[in-house]
Amino acid sequence: MRNSLFVRLLQRGLIVAPLVLLGACSSKPKEVEPTALTSFEREYRVDREWHRYSGLGSLRKPLRLEPALSEQYLYLGDMSGRVRALQRSSGRTVWLQNTELRISTGVRGGYGRLLLGTRDGEAVALSADDGSELWRTQLSGELLSRPATDGEVAIFQSQDGRVVALNAADGAVLWSFEVTVPVLTLRGLAEPLLVGNRVFAGTASGRVVALELVSGSPVWERRVAEPSGRSELDRLVDIDGNLVLENGGLFVSTFQGKLAVLDEDSGRVYWDFNISSANIMSSLGGVLFVADNQGVVRAIDQRTGNELWKQEGLIARKLTGTAIHNDLVVVGDRDGYLHWLDPQTGKFVARQRHDPDGFAATPMVYGDVLYAVSADGEVAAYRLKATR
Figure 1 (cartoon, rainbow, N blue to C red):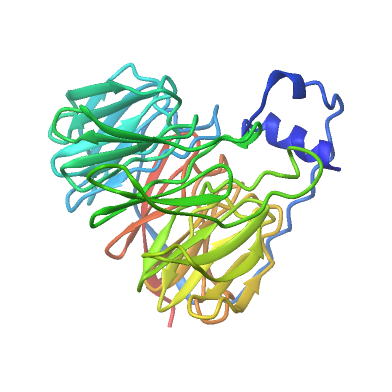
Figure 2 (cartoon, rainbow, N blue to C red; figure 1 turned 180 degrees about the vertical axis):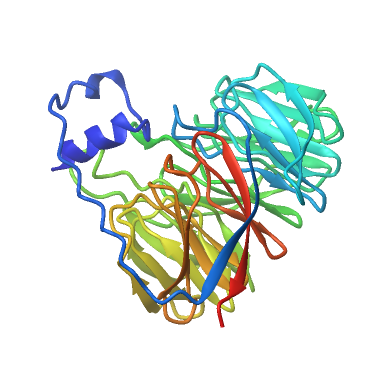
């Protein structure tokens, strides 16, 4: 059973493994059949404002290629190295730049720059005005998550366990902090979180570390999930989703581990909840919304850690992370459907098929518009309208 899981993860490019493990299994396992979608009473109509083809997306590699959103523009990068700016209101292409980079992260925008990373370990800054390169810095390992920035410092995290701070103006290295990487890891990384004078980073060993922004010195380090089991696969507890900081609590989830809240200042664990999730989670009104790796969407009370509801109608549909759109919870699935859920009950209230090829990233929201990017590069903007 565990060997079958290993093969499935390896076939999808979701793990990084030493060569000695590659021969562990030779037969292709039977996958769980995705839950069939059922009808429901629609409370909202989904209107597509516009759609465009934006590039190669992530169809050939399981990468998260999140766009960056600003008041006027949507910025997208694709695997072929093309970065473009689209008019957020119409989808019209404003500029297109062929960087020839092997882009492997989503785009982080702000302060006149676009930050991204490559499979070759290059941290790159482009001009938000025309996509021209501002600087490029070679780091020690593949980059698989968007960086964080406050306009002065850019924080990148590489697959080999390094958290690096760069001068956002010229890419000069300010400091580097190294964490231990297990023998076997998921092929992905949590986005570092930069808040005030602290940098928070999740690691492949199931730990969270808080660092001083100025020096990179560790403030605290805490294990969220304890590896267990006899095989390296059993012991995977990667933190690959996002870190959410609200009201002094740092919320984090792990693969084959736990969802927990840590004290922002000390790292002390207040509560934890058994779950396996490497997805982006969202929050609304003191509630966390998490799509786990089995396809169950859960609502968790931030204060107590109690489960408020769970939606099991999407099991084995390989869900994206969750987002909040018009005070509703939205999640995408393997077949390219977007599902909107009532945040109080978890029941379905709207559905729209975006693209049969699935998604390159968790849907993103700006104002009352949701933007979705498919695995083959189709991007579209959606609005909701109540049916009654």
